[in-house]
Image (tube, rainbow, N blue to C red):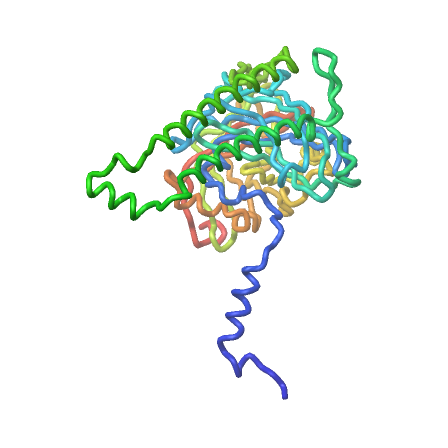
Length: 421
């Protein structure tokens, strides 16, 4: 007999529900759930590079790059008054060995970052867990959370059992593996306090609890709730806790005479030296063509430099839209850069002729890609202030690159431009 779902119309939805309940591996880190106004108008990452995309356990991967703090920082997000540089990968697949912001060690929180400034980062990570992991730099902003940069898949080969995180302390003590260093001592103290806590609970759980005690309270017999034996047991437990604390402190200070408290301070960083910015975009506004999955940018650009320039790239929310007719920009693209972050369609510019020194011109750009939908960036249309931001890279005739902000209000449209009809 041939079985069909038509005989049991409710079976197919049930199977789909059951399949949805099956565990699936997490392949992403949730950056798509971050609001677009955070991804497009706060920390804008660029020039991010990974030293390799394949590494063995115990070897290192170096991530370098820069980020720009957008001037039109959204009011709904805390400003970067206190930040911390980190990396994002599924689980503890890598160990951070070194981290720097503008050449300053970033093992502590950082202060001193100002809107409109650029900063350079470096992360050295040690491979720990074999597998294929998505590695991204991130800047944690107090009150705003982690703002993640572009990511690349890194393959780690080897055996996790071979991983070692060894070091030599300032006093000359050699630690073979920080993962297991003094783990027995830690477990023993956890077990001791668990026994103390269990003894305290069992002492009270051995007698009737809620209802009898409530009835005694109702009858005014509070005197029978806590007996002299209870007082003695409580006093004994306090004595045990005090003795254990004093003895434990003495043992630790004898074993480790030199200790460093957990870091709670912060370092100050200065922005990169301000490079000349001969190009400025003003009066910017945008439209999002919903059916065409295209962001249309309108702006006025002024070239105050001494050489003609052309627009080479627009980037926002880690997505890069490249003017493929510009040879200088194509040389600027690392062939190993994640392909899913570079739009296959060229950035369209209505007047792609060089902008001459001293010239002010109205420009129109089109950034088209399905990523506007797949990256859930379309929701900027119903954000708090419906604005978008990004960076535009321009090149002069000698190949020198300049970076400029662009941003403004964005509105949805469902029709073609009037000039295209």
